Amino acid sequence: MAKILVTGGAGYIGSHTCLELLNSGYEVSVIDNLSNSSYESIRRVEQITGKKIDFHNLDVREEMKLLEIFSNNHFDGVIHFAGLKAVGESVNSPLEYYQNNVSGTLALFNVMKKYNCRVIVFSSSATVYGKPSSLPIKENFPLKVTNPYGRSKLVVEEILRDLHFSDTSWSIGLLRYFNPIGAHESGLIGEDPRGIPNNLLPFVAQVAIGKRKEVIVHGDDYDTIDGTGVRDYIHVVDLALGHIKSLELLINKQKLITVNLGTGNGYSVLEIIRTYESVCKKEIPFKISTRRAGDIDSCYADVGYAKKILHWKAERSLYDMCKDSWNWQVNNPDGFS
Image (cartoon, rainbow, N blue to C red; front, side, top):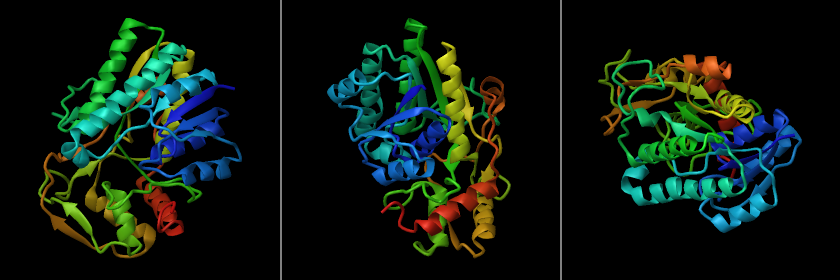
């Protein structure tokens, strides 16, 4: 039975991936400093699967503690989620983002190299494409990031490319996510933002359940179907399964892959709101506001390469994403707390 280390495994995408790893027969160890997550997510993954997770409360920048964990375990691979992830916050605190997302990652890679663990699946982002010149977005498009968060992801991608070039015994997956939403169908784990949500769907959910007055729609003058921004939203469980497929490929074959994980469809902000209304059976008030700096009209993936190389595609519909999000929200109105 292969043993996988998941950094940031108590977070939103991390916890869903841990669940699917356990369901697929892997042993799972998690390191997470719980700065933007909750240990309750780990407990609930164990509850759903009936299996244990070996959990360590630490920061990936703590290299000495990482060395100790690797000295006591043989890991067949690492899935690396740990890092800060808010675009706006990164603009205000760039040093903190580079310290966390780049320095922490270097510490992890140094320890992996020392213990000859050379399989890594890296959590990257579609933000590395910036404003695309055409759609859908292919993996070979030019990369032009517009904020420190996206730049920190791109820097780590470049480090991993250099690493593979220097030593092809490394198996590396660079997974560029589009917009993960939804929750596990059990309603036991889901997205639990701290404070005001940065992402659209948790905000919509909190308005639907009465925690917030209205959804703020940033701009209705984009060149899209209804003037509001269009994004490629993917169910978090589909995204987690994409990691399992990537891991299977990389454990069995030494290579470097760069893959978009999305649905290949774009949905507007108003389409999200309307679909959510049909799920929760109530009207969701919204207010049109000004555009946010740096936001683009449309962004959705070309998913052909993921189908070809991973034999994976997103299966769940936008209705499924909203339905599972609402189920999580209703059962956990205050998140994990």
